[in-house]
Amino acid sequence: MSNTAALGSKIPVEYATEKLEVDSEKSYAGSSELDPVAVGKLRRKIDWHLIPLIAVLYLCSFLDRVNIGNAKVAGISDDIHLTPSEYNWSLSIFFIGYVIFEIPSNILLKKMGPRKWICIIMVLWGGIMMAMAAVKTAAGLLAARFFLGLTESGLFPGSVYLISLWYTRGEQALRNGLFFSTATMAGAFGGVLAYGIAQMDGVAGLHGWQWIFILEGLPTVLLTVVVYFFLPDFPSTAPFLSTEEKDLAVRRLLIDAGPAIETAFSWRQFRAVFVDWKVYMHMITYILNATPLYSLSLFLPSIVQGFKFNALTTQAMTAPAYIIACLFTILFAFSSDRFRERGIHYAFPTFIGGIGYILLIVTKDSSTVARYVSLTITASGVFASVPAMLSWFTTNIGGHTKRGVATAAIISFGNIGGAIGGQIYRAGDAAHGYVRGHTICAVMMFVSSFLIMVMKYLLIKENRRRDNLTPEEFAKEAAKEEPCDNHPGFRYFS
Image (cartoon, rainbow, N blue to C red; front, side, top):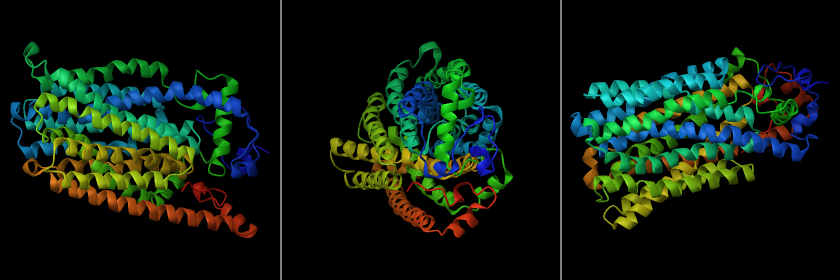
């Protein structure tokens, strides 16, 4: 009997292939007779065609959203007469637009296909980024940053969702880590790039910060051509896979999904997102982690400048902390998949990030080396928590509609932290080492690490409950319509 028939589900174009014969009981157990050599070869092929491309796109996206910090060091506040409050709001307003459009963007991505939708938003946000060089007033900057957030909103949740459509649950943390690590690379690369670009001050009558916006927005627009021709949509339609490879790609995903393979758009699944306690737990821990992450990304140049470097040296000195954070991000992502574990790989770096903020407070009057080491520890903890954070909810939420909507909802709510993060570090606190901002972020990281471990415990408890169900209890729970991850045969990653 086909897996589709056994589980009462229809497979749409994303996963449509010729008739697949998969034993449903084996699906529940996550085992199969798939050739491991063929699977390994397929996985490497998918890696090379998908991950580098979306990683480069996210590098461009993250660079474009945080280069406002480099522009500040390069003099934008003085040139367009920004007050400290207006500068902080220019950071926060980006995330207002970002949050508004994330869920609609993921729905449009599913309907139009990733390739077309991502091309559209790339042209829009790249064009807005370059046009920001023309802003003359605070109002113009605020408007540009709002629409930049609106147009960028589709890439990150769309990419996380796309990874969940191509990889099994035990493979997603590493790929999310490789993809997200470009955020740290954007910080490092952006600082070095801004260092060089800022020295173009006066070329063609433009300020250094104007050249930062132009030259960092241009690659996004140019990359649209590459995305249009090379970004794959779904495993069953990928032009770089043979017919046999497409079938294998779909088969292994169906087996890994077990009973949670509902894939047609469903309003029942849409509603299920908002009555699932796990979604709200992920929202809370996400916003607690995202607020320090974005505040650190946006203000790191200002924090480093407080270490008594001049403007140009500050741009370059943001790079080492980001590079080390990038290495730790990939290391924790690899370990999370290697041990098929999420909670500890999420909570531990979060806790270390909190320790880093405490060290920044303690060393505020110490040597530059001590303060920079504290900053590096902070950045490493903050960024290294993200791969497990992203992979935890995509691996534990079954059903395409539920996963897609939940992914957008969690990330959308979490990115409110970006708007909050834009207000945490105030210009008046700079002389005192930003103690207030560091304290707020430390508390958030410590609370988050505690809640993560609570969620891990609850998921372990639920898995044990399902393990101990009687055949009658199992059958009763399995009979519910579109149970997704609530199917008793589904096991959560903890």
